[in-house]
Image 1 (cartoon, one colour):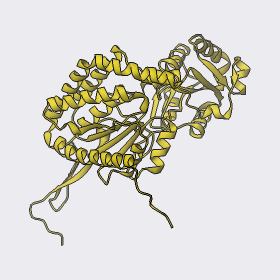
Image 2 (image 1 turned 90 degrees about the vertical axis):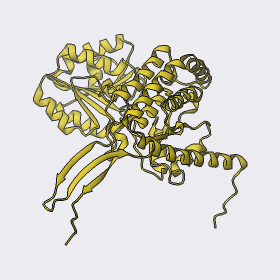
Image 3 (image 1 turned 120 degrees about the horizontal axis):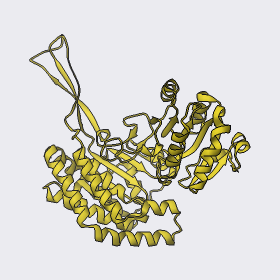
Image 4 (image 1 turned 135 degrees about the horizontal axis):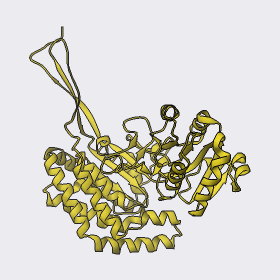
Length: 429
């Protein structure tokens, strides 16, 4: 027999607060959908202006978060994700404006056809409704997620990491002020104001049916918890175990430039390459050049036996092939052709982003066809795994699942669709 214990006063208040957020978001989503694309665009531009105006307050709040992060012993990569500078705030505001410039997806006719009986059919995009976003560390996600949800006429309930709570509060206030400036409901964007992890549990339960979809953006443990416990659909991604494969047909200079950028441009992003695969046919000649360039830029290499026989480096263990370092560390494996590269990726990858470097067009097309990841690239850095670089204005994350959304999750991926059927009096015989 299970005994249901009464809620403490704190738990009861939190439960009531979360349910009230769900109710307010549902009401706001209806108002946002009715507003039309022009007013949503105006709101996004006002939100960007409000972020710029709030720069001093954002920097002050972020300084508190950074101090708290150092006290907690956060890693350098985590502190890099947490930190906001004037340049990053300007980029955040520009990102919201970029989303404003993206075509409004709501009302788009995806497909249309007419049946022999004269009935016409359309598949039309529409908002999902209320989206919950649970994320860690990066306060800029507050702006990205809020803007993309507004672009697709969805209300957003945002639950950022405790490390970034001060920064996220000021950013969310700016977004809400922008909505108000445009005459749209402020509750279309709400930030969970507590670091209490129980708030996440309420979101996972669906807020009494008021939450339609959850999007987790963070580490492996967060995504796993959301996927395992959520009572509503989840658009999630695993860690970015990205690979760059140096094929035998690679241009050496191009390979060097790409691998150094793919690994080291920003090591704390999910599109950073974590494993370099190099074809055995060119490994002896090319690996020393690539290794020296990476090491000169401050990268630690961990290789398999064949890689270590060519260039001195630390020994890679099985764990290295499945580790998202988020640090200047790169695993290196020598593989036997495209088949060996595809096999390694299939065994150890997270289906995020993989790139082949080669001048052999046929080899490139085979790699692109056979690798089953959300993003596959040819002669390009994996650091391009970003919704903004895809022309989406921004993204909430890179989805590695197969249903609903895959790859960068932008405004279009935050829509659903319905069928609109028009007749002239037809009845079914």
